[in-house]
Image (tube, rainbow, N blue to C red):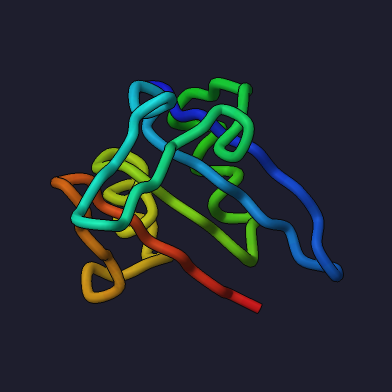
Length: 98
């Protein structure tokens, strides 16, 4: 499994945008809501599970998309199922650990 990732720093916080790599380029549509899962936002860097774990453990703000990405965060105790929003069968989760 590969993850697409982009990291940035914001006011002394590390922000990680991460998604299941195969979701890059996908449009998620639910009624009037349309979300484009773009390489520009979720990153051009592909990482393996070990690197993804390291990034998630070091981040204070996370924007996560995809079953594998969110399962990884929940397995690490970083997020919870109750915070997951499902849109067109694709899970989304935003986490603030500041």
